[in-house]
Length: 309
Image (cartoon, rainbow, N blue to C red; front, side, top):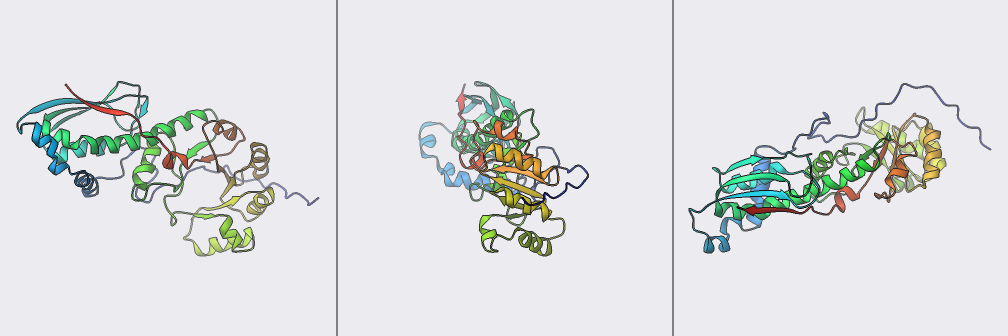
C-alpha cells in the first residue's frame, strides 16, 4: 500500500463562499440593481408585456378611477424581488403610494401581505403581471434555498448555488439565493478557478500540473478548486494544495472518508445530484459546502396574488 502522507498542522481555514464582483459578500442582504440598471430592466419588462398599451384596461377602466390593492402570498414564501415589484408600479404611476409590509429575505405564511398599493387603477393593472413575475420567480428561488438551508441546519455545511442560472438574470437569481439564506459560489468564469473533469482530461489527468498552471496564470489570491470523482484525485488535490476540493457525485461513505483525508487542509464541497432528501445525509459527512444547481434552474415560482379592495 502507498505510504499515507503525514497530516500537516495548519491554521483553521476561513470558509468564505465566493462573492459577486458587483455585490461584495458583506453578510448584509443588498439588492444588486439600483438606479439606471433597475429602471432599465423593469421598463424593458413592461415594454415586453405591452404595459404602455394595455388595451383591455383602457377599454374597461376609466382613466381617473383610483384603487387600493394588496399584493399577498398564497403559500409559505421567502421573499425576493420586492424592489422590482415596487419599481414596476412606480414606473407606470410615479405618484402611486406603496406600503411595504415585508422586505426581501422575510419568511411569510400563506395569506400574508407584501405590498399595499394605492393609486390609479389603470397603471396598477398594467404593471400587475410584471411585478408578480419578478416576485414569483425570485421568491421561488429564495423559498427553495431556505428549504435546503433548513435541511442542513445544525451541521457545518453551507448551501451554495452554481452558474446554472437564467441568461441575463444571474445577479438577480444569485441574490435570491442569498435572500433564502444560501451563499454564492463563483459568480462567473473570471471569479475563480474550478478545474473540472474535462480540464483534467486535457492534461491527461495531471491534477498537480493543472493546479500549478492555475497558480501561475490566474490573478493573485484567486481561489483554486479541483473537482474530484475518486479518492486518488482527492489525494492529488491535497498534495497540490488546492484551496477547495469538490467531491463530485460521491456516495456519502466515500465523502466521509475524503473529508477525513483532507483534515481541514482545504475546503470540501459536495456537488452533483443533491436533493432535499439527500442534503442532510451529505451535510453530516462533514463537508463545508453543498452546491445545488436546482436552486436556480429548477425552483418553482411561488404563488402570489394582487387583489383589489
